[in-house]
Length: 304
View: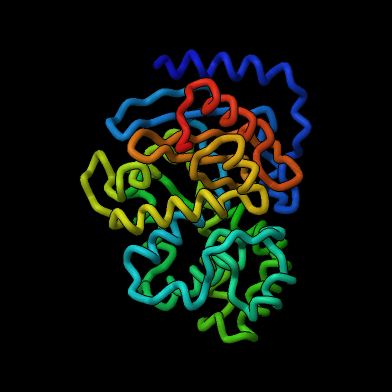
């Protein structure tokens, strides 16, 4: 299948549609990105690569990084995650306080902000150098040693992270945060600030398309059963409270971030990453969602 030709055809068709999305501005540093950027990369488990547009431009991956932190905790940490974070779709905004009160400080899943903060608390407890270990893990998955945090984005998030600080303090009151709040939030903000390109992300997520094994290194990250569960969580919880729409229209497990990126996985086949910074009202890439819907419709390649 000529993926690059398909990418171009879809992009040309989408160019006729007004992009009504808005670049994220509640983290001021993210608003500086070129709103017209667009990139896509598909990488198969056999190593074939297909790209279009700004596929090599790095951007702030934001909540996509929550998959990395969750997998690091799930693969290497012996703590039982599921006493402290659930596996259900949230049904509310990704930074909702209301839900936490109803659930007595237990976040619904690891991909909403509160759930990712609990994962960071676990990593702080279990790792000697959480930030360095997180970067090492992402670099090993991607095979790229130059991937790093963006300190300006991390600081911008910290300076404007009032809702996230409210979440962590609220969970602390229920006994679901065990470490110093500032240390936990420093890790959280830095993880969200990681910068990667579509090409790097597409390669990094291949283990989830390959039964938990990194294809190019043969390193096992997760067991097949845990890989299945990670993909299931992305399918049901990867797009804030728009996960149902993504499943309905695209039909792949995936994860989005407010930097405009979307990663989607087709088990036993490929990983595809799209980047378009303008967001819809749910916080997902407006054209990224449309692009992936057209892609799986055109290729008939979804899990359904």
